[in-house]
Amino acid sequence: MISETQKKELVVKALENRLKAYTPYSHHKVGAALLGSNGVVYDGCNIENAAYTPSNCAERTAFFKAVSEGQYDFDAIAIVGGLEDAEELDFCPPCGVCRQVMREFCKSDFEIILAKDAENIKTYKLVDLLPEGFGPEFLED
Ligand code: THU
Image 1 (cartoon, rainbow, N blue to C red):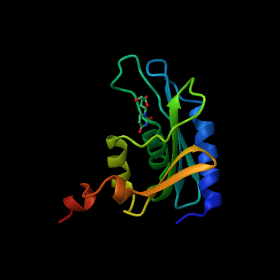
Image 2: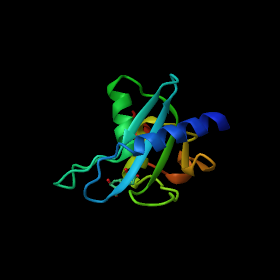
Image 3: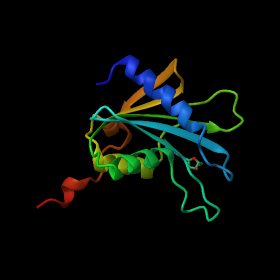
Image 4: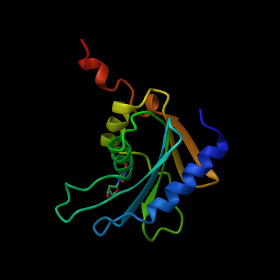
């Protein structure tokens, strides 16, 4: 489990990352900050595309950046999101595809931190947001 201070730091980073989201189509901006077990924070934002389906969520941007740099173990992710002109953010839960990507690399107690701001934070474990998920162990001999 990560500390309350670490959680807040991740949320602040996710809020910063949200400002970089490229969202000319949905105008829904999401930021993520992924804490590797090496202590490094990997940043992510959603990146949309005129052809729509190539769009990538903030969470997956962070995971793919980390994995492409050789990091495969993670402790927690903070996620914030909402429409670009929202005066305040609501909690923004990860989509099903991002939950499945988390299932590939994270243990059941991986912490998913949702926040409206640095003071309003909810924490879930991956197993609670993706119960009975299909993971790499199902393909082992
Ligand atoms: N989005 C994310 O970045 N993360 C999620 O888990 C939910 C959705 C993005 C995708 C798209 O760019 C926009 O939010 C609206 O769906």
